[in-house]
Each structure stands twice: as structure tokens, then as C-alpha cells.
Amino acid sequence: MSASSNSSKIKFGTDGWRGIIADDFTFPNVRKVTRAIASYLETAYSKDRPVLIAYDTRFLADQFARTAAQVLADLGWTVKITDRDCPTPVIAYNARHLNSAGALMFTASHNPAPYCGIKYIPDYAGPATPEITDTIVANIESASDELPSNNSASAISTFDPKPDYLQFIYTLLDVERIRSAQLKVKYDALYSTSRGYLDEVLQHSGTQLESFHTWRDVLFGGGMPEPKGEQLVGLVEAVRRDRADLGLATDGDSDRFGIVDEQGNVLTPNTVLLVLARHLIKNKGKSGAIVRTVATTHLLDNLAAKYGVPIYETAVGFKYIGEKMRETTVLIGGEESGGLSVIGHIPEKDGVLADMLVAEAIAYEGKPLSQLVKEAIAEADGPLYNKRLDLHLTEAHKTAVIDSFTKNPPKEVAGIKVKEVGRKDGIKLYLEEGSWILLRPSGTEPLVRVYLETNSPEKLTQVAQEMESSIAKLEAVAA
Image (tube, rainbow, N blue to C red; front, top):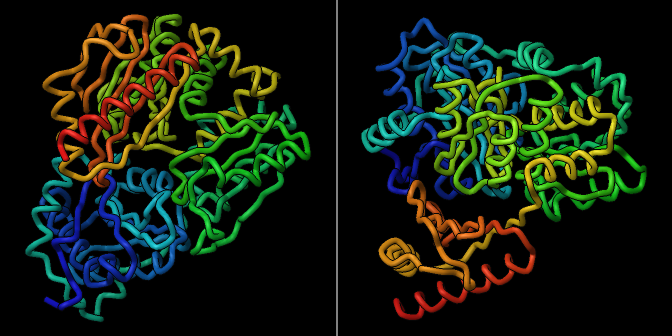
């Protein structure tokens, strides 16, 4: 084993393994993780099924992908690698469509430029289950990081994953309806893999399109490939300047969406989920369950009750939504962090489709997006107000805070009684008048995340202040 390989730093989960390039994310470690994945593949698939490999726009991502291809080919697998960087939902769709043994995707999603990552996507086109990732983790320690032989190049070929994906996406969209609306759209690729995909679908759908940052920049323009906040300032300005109907963006690997309405407001994922759930039921006549995570707005519950459709709550993480999509008919599944999928699609989040569905909703209604938001919120007995606090604590303090809330949850918060305590994922406090609070420890960072939803901005501020104060006191006691 080479000295540059350090398997103790490799933490492989549902989203795979992410690390800093040239620190722990190195070529030897990529070879090691690839061999660990290959050991799992040996137990699950026959070698007459190809392994697909794709990558995002990050520094060296294409070279890491080719390294993995050489390792797999050396082990006797037929490998098909994408001919350019590729969105995660695109390679996920192809993993199922091409009857593959799954796909390796090299991406660190919305993380900063110094990061890269690798994840395994099984042939069902959704996130790997914990059973699969646990097996891969168990294989890592004994996996070799040695260079493969050079006589396996004939087992590696390139392919274009775009045509089959786009053909499929068009079956999920009413392209003619979008075309007839003649929407004026601004699109910020944020240097991501969605360039050449989302803009092509928008052009095919007859929009008046202006695109930004549609080239590869491994530094992401000095920002982050995350479609929110300061990353969308330019998109907001463009929408307002030209009075566009809509602004669209995706994250680095295009599985998360970013939406700007015609007034220049950046919509929260909670709001987008609500608008699209209503659109699919009201305008497209679709039926099925609505699935959300514990951290996602309860307005979806109200909308589900209004239309008589089932609502399911899962733990945080799209893998749980994906599992539900594989078990039952799901109309829409999504999470507050910006990922969703819909009925008829793969059990993986797709920012390209999410963006297009918002354009479709505007086209169906013939109303501004801001009006669709108001109507959806009113129909769901809203508004409700959301906030997320990221409280940085040491690992010891993080554990102490969560243990305290678990063993002794408060009887009231901001003068409102706690009527129920949920423990599906973290600690969820259901307050008497409908507000809720979720505390979850981060699995990867020294922080506790607190999610809040209330029926007034004033109450949101009060609850947030009390939670911060309570956690600060617990931290002081633990010090």
C-alpha cells in the first residue's frame, strides 16, 4: 500500500465519500474506494452488465473518473464513461436505462471548489441504501490502492448519456404548453453540469432564453455551485432588469434546483415543492402520495389533506424518499435542502426536471410565478414561516445538547406548550398551535441544526431566540 493512501479518512455514506483534493481525495484513495465498490459489485451483478462512470466540472474530476475506469476494467468489468461532465440525475437514469451494474459519479455536489467526491448509484437509479454503503465501507480497509495494469483499455468506451435522458424527460413535460407560453427565462448554470442540458430543454421548449456561466470553471467563479443566496445575485438582477418570467439555476451536479420568480424573489425549496405538488394534482391530474422529510414544511400536509392524497414523512436524506418511491406511487417527494423527484421519474433528485416543471406550471396557469406561490400557500392554509439555525458546537457539546433534549424535552417553548415529541430523526417538538421545531446533529460537521416552522414572523423570532438561548445554556453546563 502506498504512503499516500489513508483509509482512516475515508467516510463513505449514501452520498458517497467527499474530501479535499490532494489532501485525502487522491488518486491512490480513488483506486482504493473503486476496488471496494468493485468488491460489492462482484456479489450483486454479473460482469455482462457494464459499469457506468460520470463526473462533474470539478478540478481533476475527469481524471479521477478515468482512474476508476482503469481499475474496474482491470478487474474484468466493461466500463462506459461519459464523453463530458454529466448531471447526477442523467447518469442515474442511464444506470437503469442501460441495464447496468450501476454507476460511479465523481462529484462533491454543492461543496466548495477544493472538494471532490465519489458515490455509487445502483441500477435502480436512486441513492444507495445503507446496506449497500455499509458493505462498501467494510471493503475499504482491505482494498488495494495499487496502480492497475495497462492492458485493459479495450474494455473502456465513452458514451453520450444525453439523448436517452432528454427523450425520457420530454415524456414527463408538456413541451407544447411551455412553447405556447413564450416564457422569457434567465438561466445561470453556475458553471455546473446542467449546461447543455437545461438550456437545451429550455430552447427546445421555445423559451426566450438568456444563459450565464455556461462553461467549465473549476473555481466556480470564486463562489460555490449552490443555487441560493449570494450565488444567485446576478440571476436576480437579470430577471428584474429584463422583466423575465423566471430565473433558473442548479447546483454543481444538477440534482438541486434554484428558482427566482418574476419579481426577483428567490423561492425556498419548501415553496417550490408546494407549487409543484399543487400543479401536478390540479393541472396535470396526477395522483399519488406526497413525501417529505421531517425538516420540510407541513404546508405539504395541509395541501395533501385538501386534495385527499396520502402524506408520508421520512428521515432527512433523499435516500429515504427514494426508497418510498420504489415502494409505492409517489406524486412528488422532496426536501427543504432543494431536491425533488416526481411520479414517473427515477427515485433520485433532479434539478433539471424541477426547473422545467416550474416553467410548465407557469405555462399551464398563465399567471406570474409569484401569483402561483400566493395561491398555493392560501390553498394550504398558509402562510407558515421557516428558519434554519446552524449552531456550531464541539463534538462533546453537540452530544450533550442532543442527549439533554432527548432525555428531557421542554414542556413549552416561547410560552407555547409542547404537545408531542417525535424521534424519527433527531428530536421534533410539535407545539400546541401547530408550530414545530426539529433538532438534528450534523453527521459530518460539529454543529446542531435547528429547523423551525411557525405561523407568524414574530413567533418565529421568539422561538428561534429561545432555542438558541436554551442550547447556549446547555453548552455552558457541558463546558
